[in-house]
Image: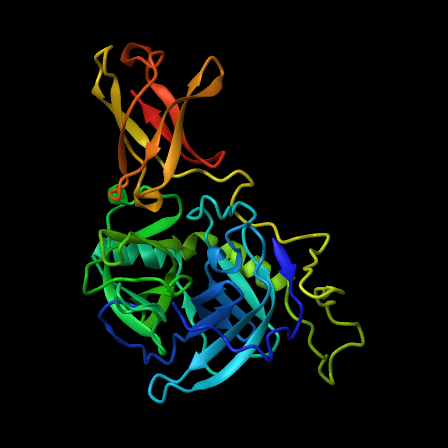
Length: 374
């Protein structure tokens, strides 16, 4: 989905403070610029990947009610003087059509187009092969952002910070197109780091492999999740190519008119959608995260199952449904624990002998995970 925003709407609005990285150091890497992203719904981090484009998380640009952010502005901050040395308004955003704010962790990636060219160097994107080589070699990753530096902090860091994190094996990261890292009380991402980059070192340069998506609560506990940017390289390239800002033709250029810009809305805060939106790589119906269950007690008088939902839905109130007679029917409900697990007593029709069952977790009427029980 590609949506244009009202140009210049935040030129006179002061951004809210970021809401950073636990531990780590100040980010002074010149070839991998991280930007502070001030938005109508709060603050995030992002990466300059081209003169007019910032890579960030979809949940930064889509608000909790599913509406698009009303305005946005990005800042380059000097890591030594803490001065905001450059800024630009966001005039359009794009995110995969499979993204749903209620689910959150599926297709949590977005591009923001700026109204003016950014100066300096731009971050590089790693390939899937470069990521695979890093994983095979056991190489570290580096996360960076403007988020909180402790759970007690009320605002984020005024400058980008970075910290080294270890990638977790695939069996401990069951989410689709997501990279998980181990975190601790002294090395973690937190509020405000969303949308920031996860880097690897490849051929002497830092390259982006992930976009900060979620972290367990409280910050520094168990793991953090990053959308796997290498799985979206085609979508990123296609979106930037199809929605490039119009440029004045060079003197030697032919007389043909340049590509028309995305139309701006005619009323304040009413975005317009082009008739041919960008088509992302991800399917229209996203693959849901896994949530598999096991029988804890198969006794008729007390049938209990334990379901591993994952930390992304820790403390969420979910309804669990099983496929029965061709349709999903609710068999239990409850609030997921802080560890992403829940044990629930099930309805009598759900029996061990009748399995295995296809099950799913539902939040506010929307399926958020799927798996099996049996």
